[in-house]
Image (cartoon, rainbow, N blue to C red; front, side, top):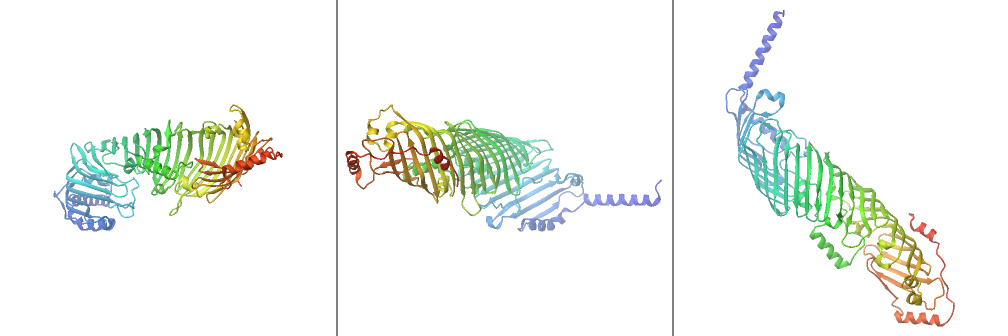
Length: 611
């Protein structure tokens, strides 16, 4: 049997517990008004005020507490007014569950709530504790019954150009939010509907954004009521361009052609998993999946995108296409693409994205047929180490790197190889064919691919071998005028090699050399190419490999652009003067020197080498 001392201790402990329970059941919650105001003010760094805080009942282990005139001022940078204002709130709390389950209320009734959330261009959020970012892992407010009347939400986001002004109502039938807003300046209707709150069962919801420029719907369920950090949903979206969807999901997506997408999404705290992505952008189709994790304020993406048909032009909206047309009108057609490589919108994004396009679509003929590669992004450095573009014949493979340091412009580095291609695939109008190999190794600063190549340093090497071309063309390349005129249209000459070696420095590429060697003649080209304008300043000299009755004496000038070259005789002497000089040489009846075969193997090796 227990001793008398032990019995006395047990009785004392029981009495103390009973007294504590009685005090807790009768606790005057109003005395916490001052401490609550001071604690909230310190945490939010703004003066929080509470009109009254009192206990409605007198004695209960499930006390009912009334709060009136709660005011949390707006952040100083966000303007005047309050970020949160509640006229009256009545909360019933079962004390027995606090220690076991945390803050779990029996019921919450709110009257006259006004929420005014502001987000600045720099990302500051007026409703969040200063210096604290949302990691997606916040706690869950739990209640068995929720009532909200005469309440509104005003949300203004300058960073993503979106806003909403909506009424909030909660009854025993569920929670609704209905109102109007704007996404990137386009008007929309916003609707949120949920099931009634109660218990810990999964909580269905439906969100709809409806407008002429954007229509989105998300239907799913949260793991528990109001648990926005743990949910599943199916999403559908239709928009004038992808940037409207990006204004909602904040993924750094560009302006594009009209888009229709669907996907399934799962959120677990800071992590998202996207599956069954399917849809179209313009005439391109997309399928894929991705995981997005948020760690230390950065988004880490791992995903795959696949396309049966893909058009790069679909990644620009009508305004972007119009700007491109204007550039073509002002500067003429260009070879190097004007694709932006600025990574500023992805400053907080890392990860890897595997891409596959089975068929590339172009506005006109193109040798580029397919695309594969893995895009990796880490701390504003983008790399593609396994790029492969399928050609009509052969392939282009290599590496791409974009380094975009903070407060500096991007720098592009290209190292590309062409193998087993055919000349006719790149220049069908020339009727010249042969196998072709190439190497491009350039590095330059610029906000677009064209701008970076226009200021680049490195080399470009192209080698064509073992081909054929019209005998007339071969004769003219050797400056054999009669051979070029009298040769049969069906007659063919052999292409021994075509060698192009350009050494670039600061956007100026110097020929070293450019040479075409055929069975009819040998042609050498000297000069420079200004890569920024793709402008040619070249001089061509040809020599036949056999006696020619009439040779063109002197160089031929090649000007214009890579896309639209222009061939002419030098201005000095003119066409007539050069022809008369050529005829005079022919009448002299003197033997003229003839060309010898070039060292094609040696020149080809040098053309493709990197110093």
